[in-house]
Length: 398
Image 1: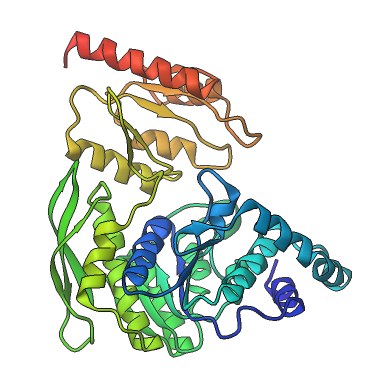
Image 2 (image 1 turned 180 degrees about the vertical axis):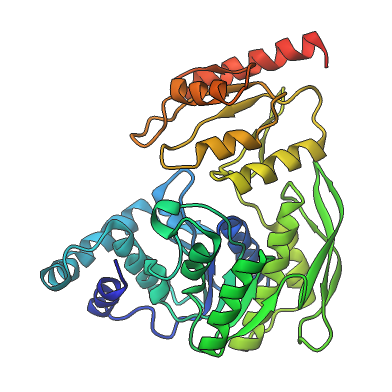
């Protein structure tokens, strides 16, 4: 564990991170959506932007993107081949680099070779020891801090906060979402240690939701006097769920932090247009057809809470039916506890070694007192079963 091997690999391929400007985004939930908002705003401003989102949704190439276009499979293969001599040299001294360390070096090299203006980089896990933390981008974002990846990051909020706050250094400008007091204390301490400036949601800036429906969200962004931030009323986003307003607010503050730190020109038109245009597939994504299907990749209790709240607010016709799968290393009991007991659930599993078997999920749900659930080991068949269950519930009435 550590950043020495990543640093050595980057130096072997010409230190492509040197001179890169941008933003590094950490946090328990909301990182991908926040990065999507930031990237879209910067592109609306006419800037060339590389993004490093994690994980990918459909293709591994999504993890290396310039102006919204993933690297081609041919270019990805060529880039890996070109790095093999450097990987071999680093391996003799530091041991073999991990897949993620190689990907990080490859993505940074691709960004440099494509002469991007800015890099929007999402932390993989934690922050302090994440390979992306070799970068020195000047602006850092912490979206929020909750219990997740406890096997690696710690079992308490302060421990996890310390890992997330490990990305803060060198007089950074830091944008942070709303935090529990014990997490905020850790972040503020780290900022003082590093001489960093902190812009905190609810203090230096805030958002107010005016509407949240199937068309998206409408909201205002407000800035406290004396911060240098500018307020923007009457914003809209096509992303579903009022929790996306918090992510949009972080993105607006982050872009303005980048304007301050990197001397950019981003006008209100770009800010508004980027927020309106941003999409992030796999996060409350609506699939066409009847009944309505919403997919979401939330994988911890806080994410499940946000999804449930959004679905309730959207007010779907009929009783929601859930198709649920999870990996074995997740806090499954806590996630199940956030699912409304009145929402029938079909448990399933993807074709992946880490996936918890559907029958085990059902057993845990039954032990927790849930009584209207079933299981189906195949995802496609599980979706069909969920559709039938929805039709059955609709026929029975509330």
